Image 1 (cartoon, rainbow, N blue to C red):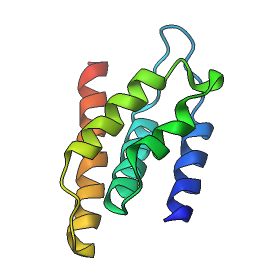
Image 2 (image 1 turned 90 degrees about the vertical axis):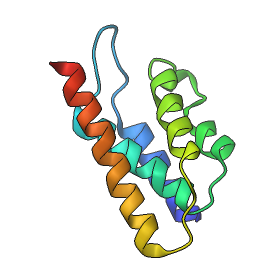
Image 3 (image 1 turned 135 degrees about the horizontal axis):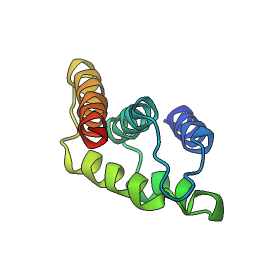
Image 4 (image 1 turned 180 degrees about the horizontal axis):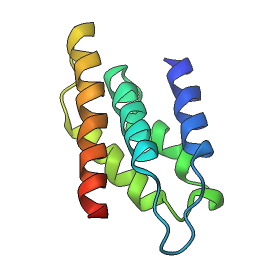
Length: 104
């Protein structure tokens, strides 16, 4: 579980901070969403996950990251590895599609 936190932190800190009016790429949004769902499926508390974005450097994207995390944590926490993996992929895909639709 600690490894997932480190991965989440690396993904969150590797995302470039948004300048005003600039968006994250759809791939970055999808990767972020997948990582958050993976944390959710492995029992990482949402407060612990969001503590990584509660920094000055992440202020510009905090609300977007929080929205993704809330949606991830509203999903069921599955008990089998098969369903956990499926939920991670589907969640990342859902956010990728939402991003694409938002750019059109």
